[in-house]
Length: 356
Image 1 (spheres, one colour):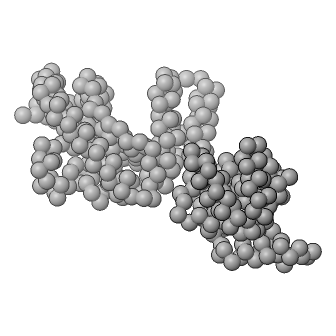
Image 2 (cartoon, rainbow, N blue to C red; image 1 turned 135 degrees about the vertical axis):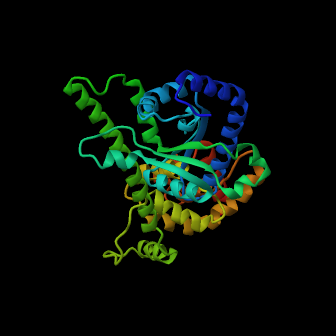
């Protein structure tokens, strides 16, 4: 029964905590698994990590004393400490981008019973000169549908808190906890802390904008292959006054053209970026039309060489990147000779001499 006797309620809470720690830990693991499964099933949410914890017993008591004890006792209200520790079980979801937070909020709201939401992002952004920890906190319970499932039968009376934040916000939270004095301090030190927090906020926004610009860049290069072929035709004809302005080769246009020639190969973004940089460094004015020209003019011969090479050197890997290297080398040996090792160029040249 609730009471106003703090020592009694403290002992009751400690007894509950000690007697149910295994249950709480099992619930934590179950909630982490469920939240992780729900979010990862959504392809448009970029997730970094999901982790959880059962709050330390003494930390729970300390939190109650600091936030609730005086108010409850001054209003002569009976209480149980457990009722006020909504984050006894905590799950932290760390995503990549700010706009993923709202998506995660909507997703979790659809699959759990929402008890309360604390939007620390709005609290900070709605003030003129305040910076600090930003994140979204949701107090949740299993919904009625999941409470009926046998795997959750032990946890039907347990709530938990989900903290949703970006990688940048998570990093600031870690640093913020290390800054011991933030309020009653000299103004110049407070300004420096606010400046640091503002830099994290800018980083979060720029990270999102870079992603958006990358998506727009990829969309801009998502043009019909026929248009790229016309650029290649223009190069082949040697027109003095081309009707189409050549577009420089970049990672996005490289990927577009590479997918045309190797539509079943999975090109990893990191490798595409590095390979495109390597190619462009050898010919800085290389256009996408010229690159496509090298590929379409030489790929048939290179594929025949690939059959010869794999038959005679079965231990070597001849993947699409290797095909592209040979197409460029065949297109302009003087420019692209560094794309092949001396041994590979020697074997290729010997084959070309016998298969001209």
